[in-house]
Image 1 (cartoon, rainbow, N blue to C red):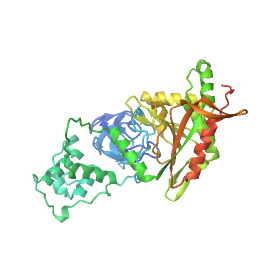
Image 2 (tube, rainbow, N blue to C red):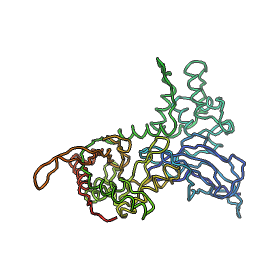
Image 3 (tube, rainbow, N blue to C red):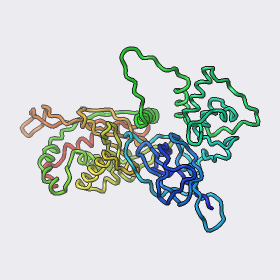
Length: 454
């Protein structure tokens, strides 16, 4: 028998961890090549992880709801081999089957990078006295709460094969602090080595759940628990604000020529191309032209280094039926004409709403566009989509009386007006660059050629 170790696959450059949603196999179950072993969730999409070998599941190393770093061994498969070599074989799925797109618009969680062989990797035979497996999160909580291995062994587990889950240990900690359970001191020789330090999120989560008493609410209220998606949205918003000093600039644009042109060609365009033309590809086209003039807008920061991206990949915030947002990315948008941009925009938007996005569809963005006007808002102050340095919001297009300059002098006319706002990372984008770029986008829209051919 040869052992093949199934590892958490890489799902994108900015994704460093995934949550296990469901195991389709348990130890002892046979598994075929490419058969689904488990479902995982990232901050972008929910996915299926297929088997990389045919054989029998020997062990699974994490429980449902465990957060697992990319590259960690998640299961071991025994497979028939032609030799007697029993050394583990590290393999990574070449493809991950995508199941649904249910995630926030903001970029992935920024955590410390993990190596391909994660330091969290453990085997059931070495991380406990009885051989019972403990997930890294459980061990982190135990270490932070001063729970010895001997004491950990006494905690009843409700997980698979009696394993201790995060819920089990948090309930135990809560009861111990309340005095209903006496703390058990273990001999020094029985202490286990503390795993790598918990992340800030883990510590804050433990502190929130164990040290704060339930709040009392007066009046007639309804309490709704955050689901996974909403928690990720909250985490991403806070993290982006902590990472980047946000500055937002505003301008307005007279988009009358653009609106009139679209109204004139939209029927013929749909008949010829079998897809509708919206304002979004027109906005993206203008943004791409301006990024070429101001390439520093299309960058990210790595410590003290500025990483200028040569590829122009535009993310577009898309509303999901659930009310949440996701940001599919149009890769190499500068290499597409208006027809190509329109088809990409519509395809990605449809796939997002129907849960058909792939993990790669939400990766690699270098600049983000969000249309707050689609919800009726005149303007907004968007939060940067990390690790990008700028995000542009377009508001609702409204008819307003404005002063226009003509050959005969100034006059008042009814024009289609739109506000634009852009939030940018003030560590790298100064006000002069941010405002100049935003103004350039507005001018590009204002100077749209009303006689343009489709």
